Length: 211
Length: 209
Image (tube, rainbow over all chains, first blue to last red; front, side, top):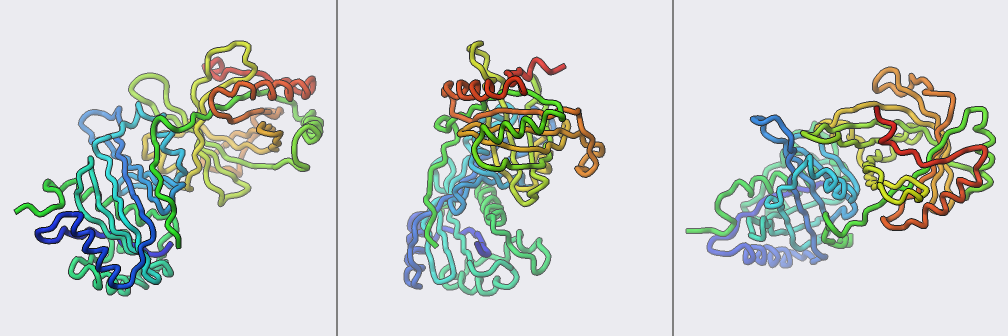
C-alpha cells in the first residue's frame, strides 16, 4: 500500500463515458502500462431511523474496496471510520430496524487496473442505479507512504496521461501534519472515493456532455 | 502485485447464519484447580490459553421494542489484536429437549476506534467488565473459564474488583443453523465434568429484571 490519489476525469467533448474511458486506457497503454485485472469500489448508504424529527439523520456509509476484499469500511462523513471484516455487512442486516439501507443510493465504481513500474492506476466508471455518472482515476505510488514526499512525482506522472485534469493534493492529505504517513488500511483512499461519489451524486446532469 | 479477485459481495440472503450453542455453569474458586486439571485431561492441546479481556456492552435504544445490544471486547494481554464486536440474538424457542441454549451470533473483527464509532452510531455504553481466565478447545467446542471483575472507574482497567468468589464456565460451539447434533457432543462433555461442575442451559431473558 502506498499513497493513492483519487480524482474525477471529465468526459471528453462530444464523447460518451465509455469512449473517454477507452481513450484513457489507450493513453496508458501507449505509456507502457500493463493491464492487470479489474477493481471495484462500492458504497452503500444507511440512515439512522428513530431520530428526533427536525434533526437531519446521520448518514452511515459502508464501503468495500476490491484491493482489500476481506474488509469492510464503515464511515460517517467527517467522522470516525471503522475498519471491519466482511461480517459487518451481516451485522448491518441485523440492525435494519435502526439503520435503513437507502437502496437507491448505492454507488459502484468498476474498471480496469493498470500497472506501470511503481504506479498502480485504476480507471473506473462510477455508476448509480445502473446509470454511468462519471469517471474516476486512482493513481497509487506504491513505494512511498508519506504523501508530502511523493506528491510532485505523482502529479508529474498524472500529467502525462490526464493532461489538464490533474487534481490538487487531496484534502485527506492536506489535513494531515507534514510528514505523517498514509496508513496501509485504505481508509484515506476510500474517503477520497466517498468524496467523489458524493460530488457526483449532487450533479444533476449525468456524465455525458449535453449540448 | 497481482490484482485481488473482484468478488460480488452478497449482503442479504446468501450469508450463512451462525448460531451459538451455549451451556453455562460456575465453580467456586477453591474448586478451580481441580476443574482446570480435569479440563486439561479432557480437552485438546497441552496447555490452555490464558486471556485477560475487557468487554464493554453497548445499547441502542430504538423507538419501540427492546434495545439493541452489542458487545465490544478487546484483549488487555495482546493490545494490538483487533477488537471483537459481537451480536447475540434472542434464544431460539423451540425444542425443549434441546440440551443447549441456541441463539444467532454475528462476530466482527474491527479496528481500535470501535467505542468512538459505536457512540457515533448512537450506541451508549451500558456497562463494562474485565474477564480473565483460561480457554480450552475440544474439537469444535470451546470451554472458557473466567473470573469476572467489575471496573470501579469507567475506562480504568487497572482498578478492578472481583464480582464474586466463583468462576464462570461457558461451553459453546459456533455452527451454521440447523446442526443440532452439536448439542449432543456438548451434553456428553458436560456429563464428564459432573459432579465438579454442572453445566446447564440458562435462559438470559429470564435473568433480566
